[in-house]
Image (tube, rainbow, N blue to C red):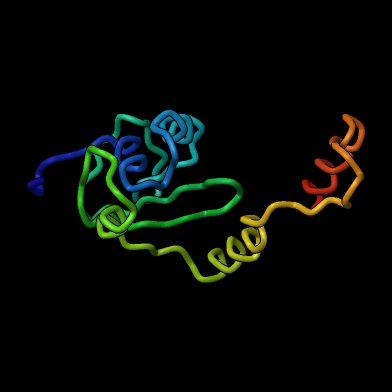
Length: 130
């Protein structure tokens, strides 16, 4: 794309895989969780190369600099070339600490069976506290 072209901010956030769906990106913009150059933007804001995008997602604050504009979702290696990650190291460390161990399935005692509704609520409350 040429320098004068613009792409919707919600479309760009989805294309570079910041959000899993365009609807989630649109909802984040509507909820004032997306800022461009320090200003809250609507989903239809025309994003340009060189602008700084701040995203609040799952309690974490991410910052990106736009290096390339794309409209269609691409693979992760190509998407990473479209932005520069400016997120502070403290925020990345906080994210990494939260994410550690999330990819592994949870263990349950053999023969304990499926959790009851009461057990499930207790487990969910425990996870929210951690």
